[in-house]
Image: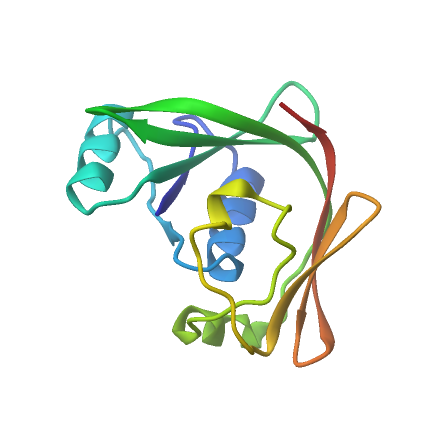
Length: 151
């Protein structure tokens, strides 16, 4: 699936979105630029993606992660997660994650990851009291956020 940021996103939102794409399985970051969102939806649909993710900055320092699900010929907003970034300084070895195919994750965390098969892996997504963190080979990656609200 694709993940992109809003059209006029600031640097920190783009950075957060790109780093999140490295940690979530089967998620590819697509730079938005001036591209119309409909063109990105069309490309995602053509490639067979059932979900599409978009991040935006509401008026606070929080991040809104929106999950769109394909229904018919278009994508419709299915869920929204209001996130508060806690730590986003990823260690440099995070780039190896894109080659991994399996990620251990709580099933109830993000519904768009439910289609993804989980097996033994060195990467884990941990959730503790709405705080989501990522662990690789039992070591903290230094990327975490708090889920403030889910709609």
